[in-house]
Image 1 (cartoon, one colour):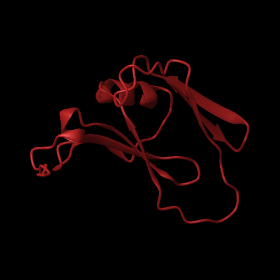
Image 2 (cartoon, helix red, strand yellow; image 1 turned 90 degrees about the horizontal axis):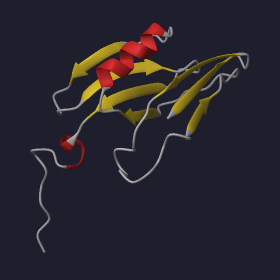
Image 3 (cartoon, one colour; image 1 turned 180 degrees about the vertical axis):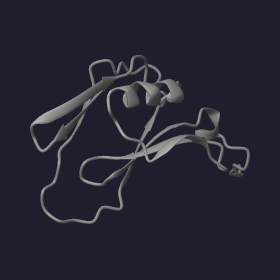
Image 4 (cartoon, one colour; image 1 turned 135 degrees about the horizontal axis):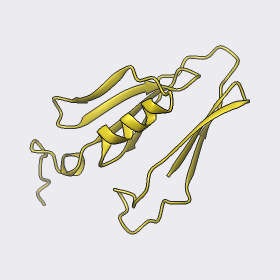
Length: 114
């Protein structure tokens, strides 16, 4: 997957990952793109964008080598996800994470009985 961050509409930083989508293992995501652009007017965003990647620590290392700043390094969270946090140029929070089985089947999951 290739993500492109546009800074002031002129500069961009590209990074990519290879492989299959974790939520849809049969989906080919090698030709997918994601773009963010800088908003010049005032606004307040409470949106959090999540991207899951199995090799989170290495992915963060690659992004940092390309100049991407992280507000939080990959950290094991109490809800059993490993997360890194950054913000896009407009201030939107982005969480890169790896949850594995815990995303869909956490130990505290309540089974629905019929």
